[in-house]
Amino acid sequence: MQAVKNGDTVRVHYHGRLTNGTTFDSSEGRDPLEFKVGAGMVIKGFDNGVVDMTIGEKRTLNIPVEEAYGPKNDELIMEFPKENIPSDLNPQVGMDLQMSNPQGQVFPVKVAAIGDTSITLDANHPLAGEALIFDIELVEIK
Image (cartoon, rainbow, N blue to C red):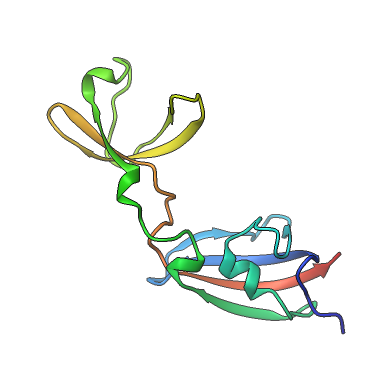
């Protein structure tokens, strides 16, 4: 039976959860996730975890922080003066916003804290700093 190797395009069903059991994503009710193994289209631990799987095989991947979205980066947490916030925006802790850098690139941020004169914005990936667990099933090797 054919086993997955780097360079193969595969389709998998998955259920992703945090180490505390909280589900953060799943392909349930959707088409399987399709990606090219080893091309960096998914996190490293997921990429490596499908190698040598055969069609129909199920696996649980325990992915450490370093092979997921990496540790939180303090340089991506910034103070933003409230006076620079549009007057029609009422930021709340946990709210997702969009910012742009001087080059015009847009990136997502989350409101982490609100002070008297500034708000704290976090541009880390929402899963940065988290070890992840994926239950996966290989559906197809293309």
